[in-house]
Length: 129
Image 1: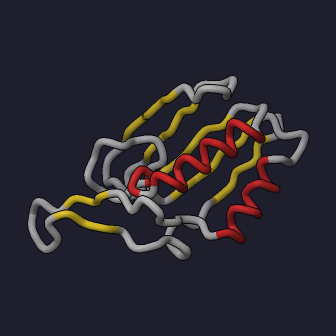
Image 2 (image 1 turned 30 degrees about the horizontal axis):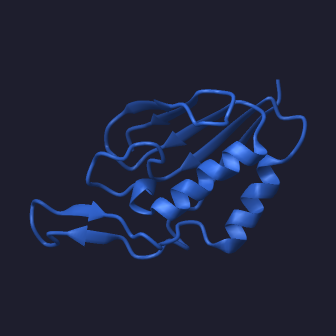
Image 3 (image 1 turned 60 degrees about the vertical axis):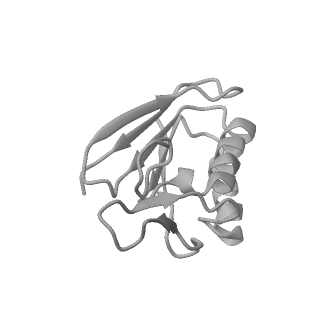
């Protein structure tokens, strides 16, 4: 079985993370509707990586969670345009199983969604870091 692991840099090119109630114990991240995470060069690289033939399983790692939306911490859902772009890339370019591995929550979590148009369930495993 050929497995490929892709490590994304979700911080270097990322636009500003916006906060509700900054400086308080009730601080929560809020959506940056036009914000970017990966930057154009990394998006192009990622597209090339997922199109590589002869891969049986693809693993994409990100320092922040991709699937969860409900918590108030840093996550891809704070950048909805980028999250949608990632899901569109998965739908358009992947015909193989994909597993997401993430961190930065100080908890362990397993998430799953079914993307319309993608033939596999999409799982995310968040590790304690």
